[in-house]
Length: 476
Ligand code: UDP
Image (cartoon, helix red, strand yellow):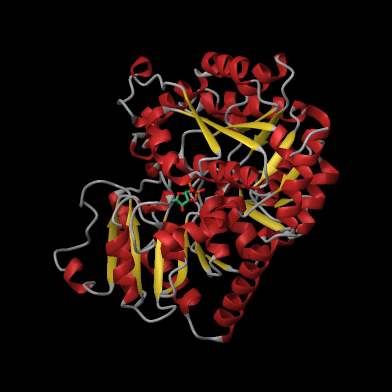
């Protein structure tokens, strides 16, 4: 058997920032452990990825069928700005990459492919060529376990009760029914294709070689174990993968350019933070693609103002319909910064001035907040974010829930959370009472565990070596 460099792994990220960025980081990690690594992507994403990868990582580019699906040219790296309708087409366009993927496997002949969960079709293509496929979920063990638990009880829910208790998990986890979506109930709705896709995802999962997880053992040992005992999918926990950017991010923090987080108005925002006392600023951001109604943004604006804290708030929506009144910007001048577009999130979270994070609980953001040692205000919207909220609030006890009660893929589908709720949650997280202090202490402890996990000899570091060794034995 050969060494790691004889092992060629092809990574194929899904073209949405929240899926692509961590899988690119993972590819870099496997390259750092000596494997030969190729990333397969489309032209507009290649432009983003190229400056962030070392020359040892190869990029292989296939065209994206924008025109064929009525999508704007080059939209593959801006899916977050697409309307909700176009996002459906966008996901369908990605599924149409079967043929080029097949050709790439024929030409490159990798020993193994790591592809996003939302590309279940890569499984059949790889399997037909005898190439093992590893799944990248982009989430944690807790949410996989929680959704399994929900599957076991969804057919006999008590119609009279708004709360569900997820059965059989290591912690007592309760959720509102409105916070969980039963994908089988999407038939006949515009999201039906999503249900179809997820059915396929579930069907191929047990046939895959296994799954790599952007998590680390010490974060959720009970759930790593639960998953091992209750499912047949092998997993490797190799995260937090974003920590591989730490050195690069620090180097380019003031220089501009370089790391993947340096697009947009990075310099201005960081300079503003430089002028603030340590731990005094709240950073609010809802991921790469979350839009809100003007009514909701107005409440957010007022809630942040009323919290009395300094804040950096990333608003993804175009337009200004949400600005509460003419005096708003004047009142928050010097205290609140509204970022339009893409914020340098990793750099902001790790800036000494930032002391709390209002997050939609996307797993990357959650983990980045954890790594920065910050207490969180949780405001989930859809996907597995409501599970992540339970994990952050009930298991890790580093978050305060704002009170988001309804899962919905659309901005109109979610009832408005009033300003007062955000104000209260931010005050609790940023407070100087014992409860807030304890929460901060736990957050810092968890961050320390994360750093240890990725260091040489740490649990995630060892896990990458373990997977590489196993793959060499089996395929190289
Ligand atoms: N992100 C960023 N700037 C922004 C918004 C998001 O750098 O203005 C990054 C963030 O750091 C994270 C990713 O985009 O790595 C979002 O992933 P997440 O899983 O949190 O949410 P999603 O976008 O998938 O809903």
